[in-house]
Length: 355
Image (cartoon, rainbow, N blue to C red; front, side, top):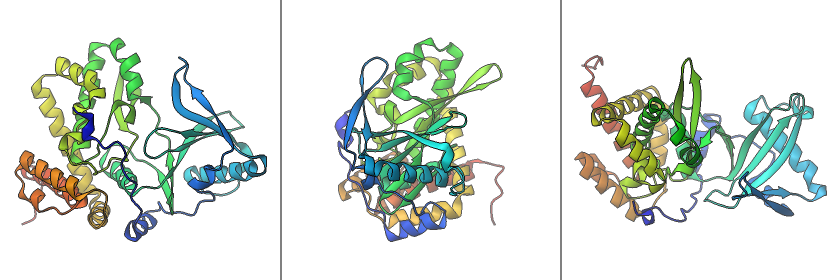
């Protein structure tokens, strides 16, 4: 796939009053003691290299002494808000090990490493510039994927939890060849389902470094799950192929492996399974999802040219005239989800339908 189909620099879209109200209603909008711009005041930084000596595109920052204590205390408070009840009880037992800044990508995040000094356990969270596209993507991930995801927003600052897993590009490079045939079939199944899920919910640009592989040991096997970690390209691009990871060159090895280890009948079965699961999740989240899509339909998160291209492309794929009538990205996504839910209900003989 021609990478020019993906915009090199997607603009950040502001959070509207309606979206802010929605976030407040669902406990996402909360007062925090530090903003993204506060962390930009770092005095200097050191480049971070991986174990092979390669530049990670992250830098480790340091702050002026008169600001450091206040910043670290504020970051500890954010941790307690994100993971506990927000009280000061835990503060004496927390230590900020590092504040790293990413020089690559749209969101330019800060990665905070925080450690519990009682047991030496640590975790990460991220502070980013808030972008409406990303917030819609996070909320849709929470409702329509198998994964719950936690984040907080205050004005123009976004706080995200860390999503654990092996980065997709590293897994493909270092681990894929060593997998057994049965594991490769399990990974291929998950890739098919992930591909379908991204397409239906219009999450774009799932190149291998924008998702992680999550491995869970289950009796005598390993379960594999692919989790998106980048949501900037939610409903922005116009070409439908952007929303299918199978068309991104960074995923070519997964695509080739899937073609080798799975029969077409199996691929079709897994696509149907994922669409059915998406439909069930959409139905169970009906009020909240409908509210979000209504707000999204009143928002500007793409360009008129991309909206026109996407709705025409999806009409050609589905012959659903509702796509042609969609006026914006929110309406296009609502039509896509309605299409999946309607087909699920029509094809399932066990669904009890209203008279």
